[in-house]
Amino acid sequence: MSTLRVALVQLYGRPTKQECIANAISQIRQAKDRGARLIILPECFNSPYSTTEFGRHAEEIPLGETSQALAKVAAELGVYLVGGTYPEREGTRLYNTCPVFGPKGELLCKYRKLHLFDMDIPGQCTFQESAALTAGDRLATFSIGSLKIGLGICWDKRFPELAACYRQLGCDMMIFPSAFDPYTGPLHWDLLGRARALDNQMFVALVSPARDPTTEYVAYGYSLMCDPWGRVLCRAKEEQELLITDIDLKMCGEIKQQIPILRQKRGDIYELKAMK
Image (cartoon, rainbow, N blue to C red; front, top):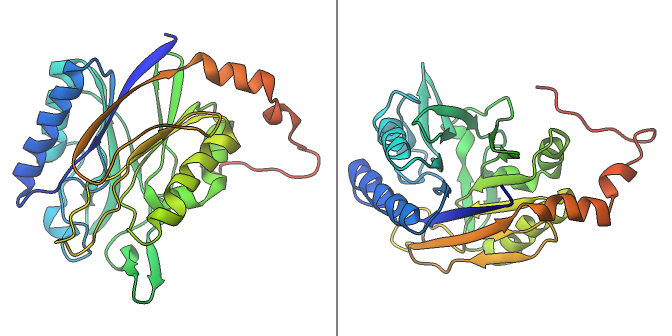
């Protein structure tokens, strides 16, 4: 496998969970029709992004309604499906979780957001995920052929050590379902995606909900894919949009050969390692 066709699915929210799921599945089918093998949904696509709503929309993974619908369509279409994120309930705890379903509908892995979005920019954006959610405690990866892919969620991409740990694990791609805000979005969205790609010589996908100014929390939009050179390969606008891009997997080995920074790290001076 030298190339992989990837779909980034930027979705509007809908009034009910069932309508959100139906909208996502419609776009997943369109992505498959356009040849996508890996399809990625945005953060919190089946629920309002609100600490008061997470619990009302939460479900078990993979037994819940959303998971069952995504597993079914992944198996039907024979695709790898990154289910964006949705609120997960386990006992009394809630998580912001990204599940990945394989082409047989199997749950390949799930990732719980490690770094919770607690931010306060007065007059611009204030949010406290930790008021409702519990942080995850481990990394998650899956593979498509020889391509190993790591998972993060939105706020996680502000922590370069996380992507660097995935690089150590052999990942050549990172996926971040992300609901950035419109204030920091123009300042940091492209910059963070490109930086994580350039630092780690990997592909990086950022997949956002579409922008809806009528919601309590307004997402930035502008889903994008960066290549290992730090270039933006494709970018959505603010509305619901389906992006299709082919990534050249040979590029990963080529850039590591041409710019061998991964071999030149000074392990005798500094060290980074994942604890779990």
